[in-house]
Length: 519
Ligand code: GLN
Image (cartoon, protein in one colour):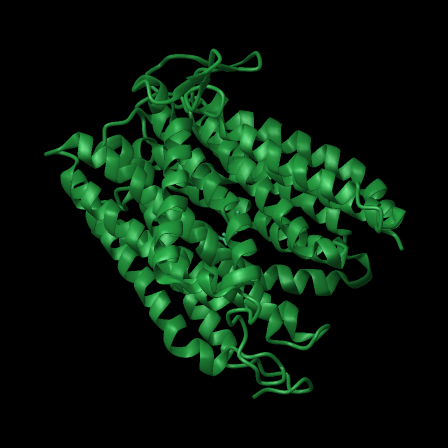
């Protein structure tokens, strides 16, 4: 076992690294081909696929609220990770069957599609919050190695994030829609590998500083919570609700007249169809719980206000950033010249770029913050810089497509350069924001306020889908708040304006936020 004074990391970090790496491989590998599968195999329109992508990724960030709660009270982290992982693997295998039946039995394959996504959503809810929580628990409180442990863990995320689109793209994104199923299968196998690593090595290596295994089932958990039948039925219900929410939100429920009518209000097809209601309700509930708490001091409340404010701004970041899995993949597929002469780069490969840049650029940013020393910008200022870099990335690609006739493909350099700038933005905003939330949250509400951060991600992903549906397609102009989109240039400029404006406002607010945080 590694001790406090020893600068080496505990072996458990390698276990968590490998578990997370294979899970992210599964998630991002599947995501890399998701919209391509929807448009080329299921023959959904780009607009519809974009909405569905937004609904799916949004729910993926919302379910950790449930998974974290159940782990804390009933299952503990390890059980939750293993169960969540198995549920996700099952989701991938269901999608494999969906990919095998879409031509012969479209109705069955649509059913399998929503079911598979429901399993992916609910499984992730148990996996993601629990694995992230374990990393810090292996060290004594305040240990100087914790930051570097999370940096190493973030590398694990991104090694998986780079491998997934690469391997799943290679086997699934071949130009023949019948091959997409292999990507789901490859993702599912990776997920099983993650579970196996966790199952074999967790108990032995993932320990707290005094040598006790972490994340075991809480002793106070009632016996019935471990009952297999109850667990399986509970998970089936959770996956069904997730799939149902996605289905209702997609609008298909309306088309198929699904739902019921209470006193003239159509439940299921209109009132609850929009996930935005669910997301808003989550945020408002959390805000009410925290701000009405009488035990919190004025200073603690003003720190919480900072958390809510920066979470609001990150919505603008991720909703533009997460175009990667939707409109930017359509752009890679249709508008980018991917022919290298000896090899045509699959469109899905471009989703690896973000992770590749994280791994290569992160050391530079770590060095930069140290180098700046006393002149190191404040956290909100760094986040404003992150938004600015994101806007710059879109400006770069907007420049690349300006005056290009529709149908003419542009060089890959535009997407590659844009992803480099987007990733630089991510490195200024994401780890900084996360540790800011950790630092500012009163202990009593630590997990709940982490949930605000996750819910901001959920909001952002939902918005990402909605914005991706504005991707110019078929020469028809699309409008948003008086802004008309006729071509790719107009589309990319929308993100320049959105992220640029958010960057400016946050930049001007940062001094005020700093004052609110002062002890
Ligand atoms: N790429 C990181 C992950 O998958 C962070 C994504 C995010 O916070 N939106 O964990």
